[in-house]
Image 1 (cartoon, rainbow, N blue to C red):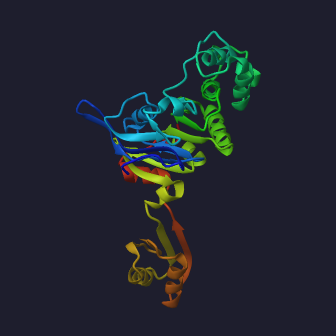
Image 2: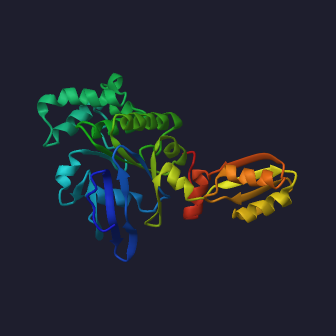
Image 3: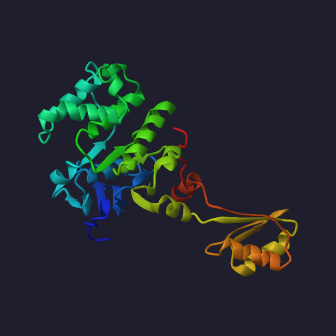
Length: 315
C-alpha cells in the first residue's frame, strides 16, 4: 500500500516506519482499521505498539511512510483529524486532590475548541457515559484503579469522538477494573465509535475485539478480522476411530497435510477441504468414524506461533 485515504477506514498507514538512530522501532507497517471496528493491537512489550500509536496521533514524526485518521492525513491535517479522536496513551494523569468532575472541567478549559457554555453538560455526560456520575465529586486520590482509567476515558469523551485510541487501558487493573473497562469499550463500539485498543492481555482482547493486528519486533505479522487472523494458523481435523491406519491413508489421499497417527485417532491439517467431504470419504472407505472434529488454534497458540513468544493471558 503506497497511499492512504480510504474513507472506509478509521485508521490506516502505508509503510509507516520509525527509527531511533540505528534502531528500527517500527518497520514499514500497513495498518487498516475499519470504521466501527474494535481493533485489538497486540504484541509483547517492545514490539512497537506504543511508538506506532504515537506516530498515528502525531506525537512522533515517522522516519518514513504515511498515515491517516478518519480519512485525513497526519500530520498534514492532524489538527482537523484529532478533534474527532479521543486517546489514552500511557495512563491517565490527574490532580489527586481535585474531584473527578473538577479534573474534567480543568481539562475542558484547556481545549481551545471547547465551548465553555456547554462544559457542565458535557462533563456530566462524559462521567455518566463511563459510569462515574455518582462518584463525580469524590477526590481523584480516592478513586480505584478502574475508576481512574474510566475517568481518563471520560476525558477523551468530553467532545464527540469518531475514534478512540487506547494504549493498554487495562494495564495494572484488578479483574473488576478490567471488566469495567472492557464493558465500556464494548458499549462505545455498540454506539458506533471505532476503538483501537493496544493490549497485552489476550483474554480481554479476545472477548471484545472484532479485528486484530499482531506486532512482532516492529513488524505487523498478522491483520484482519478475528476469524481471519485465527485462520492464519490453520485448522486441525481429528478423527477418532478404531481403524487409525486406514483413516490416515484416506486423509493422505484426500490431500490432508501433516497427518499424524495415534492409537485411536488421526490428526491432520485439512486446508480448504470441507469437513463433510472428509467424513464421506472415510465412510465410503469403510472406516468407522466415532468422532470427527475440526478446531482452529487458540489466539494464544497463534500468537506464540507468529512471534515465538509467550503472551500474558490473565493480566
